[in-house]
Amino acid sequence: MKGQKILKVTSILMIIGGIIAAIAGVIAILGVSALAALSGSAEGTGLLYASSILVTVASVIQFIAGIKGIGACSVPQKAVSCVKWGIIIAILAIISIIIGLVGGGQFSITSLVLNLLLPGLYVYGAMQMKGTA
Image (tube, rainbow, N blue to C red; front, side, top):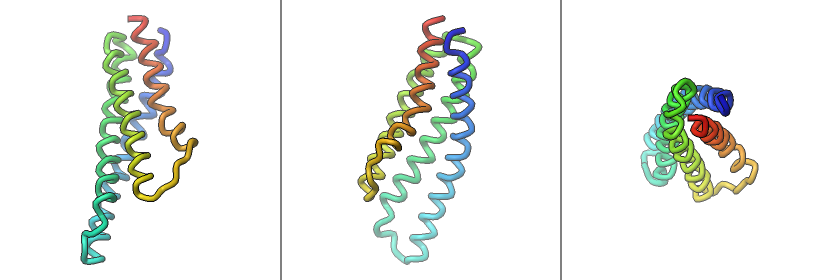
């Protein structure tokens, strides 16, 4: 089927990335908590907590999207929901970049492209699958 290979590969990458990012997100939350405890003040940790929580939530969503993408490879009718999941992941990637900029980071077009590449290919594969349904 058209798009099946792209959707399957991107789904597997999303599952792997989602698991790794979830672990990193939990470690980040614990690290921010330890930082606040060591400094004796939670002042200035709000943005760190927000970005750590966003990473954790986005990774869980990415993992779910990967599972749904694998399922859509065998049932093309499920590809419609994969398009929605892919768009949500792309939006979360953009929000993550914005939070990084607010926190004092610098904008990088390379970072933007790399953060949107996997969700873009995932949506592309799902759209191809949707067309064959």
